[in-house]
Image (tube, rainbow, N blue to C red; front, side, top):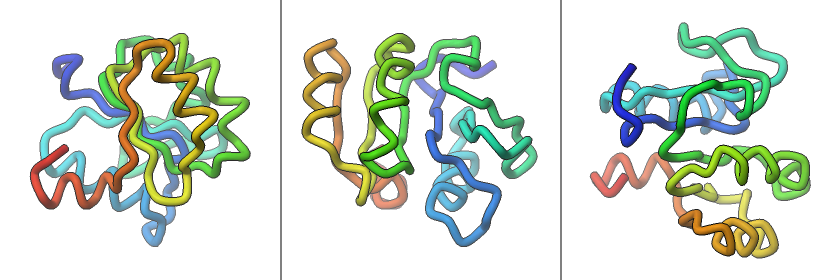
Length: 124
């Protein structure tokens, strides 16, 4: 396994090529990141096993990048808090001040940004 600092969990991963989460996974993998898709109904994305929940993944995760709407974050927040990643990226459309505040309160970094743009501009 690659180092902890290179691991990225994608909450809201999708096997559909038109989805931004799919494009993010492609680009993350192309840039050498260990990517762990989290999707309750997909067995794999781009040949990588999907995990049903973040807590099902047994190893530490450095970054969680979100591709789920804010209304779904209530159910996902406890798992993110327990996993305690270094940072959580709120991609466009996922922003939620309530959830961001809860993460910051627990010492988890929060970034409102687009994973694709961060990778393209080498700021990831």
